[in-house]
Length: 138
Image 1 (cartoon, rainbow, N blue to C red):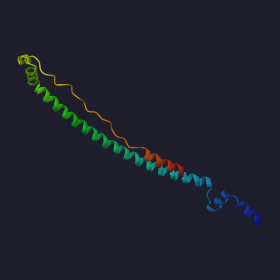
Image 2: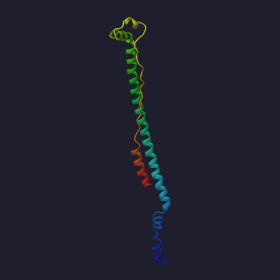
Image 3: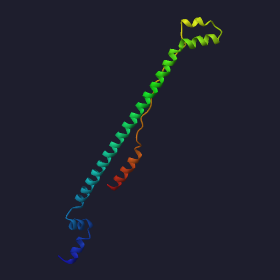
Image 4: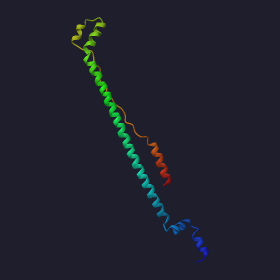
């Protein structure tokens, strides 16, 4: 075997890598991919935890808001119900009708309104951008 044969053998960069490191290029790539996948899994788990925390906080805010709206509505309905006869009598007097007619019926208290709302969600665009960077590295 001549010196020229050694030079020709190392003209193959893959062979040079394997001889220098003692690790095949495929094994090295597999090892790198495992590291990238592991880092991605950790990142995604952390982001999922943040998203769950955010959603729980927003759901709590929504429930608190709904309770406050229901309390307001119940107060309004109670006020309307407790003054229904008086309002009916005033309406009849203003219309020039005998208010004694109000004895049999009351003014309407109106229909109740329920509170509703949507929960917020985290924007996934930021996480998608980071994942695309990680994919480009892998």
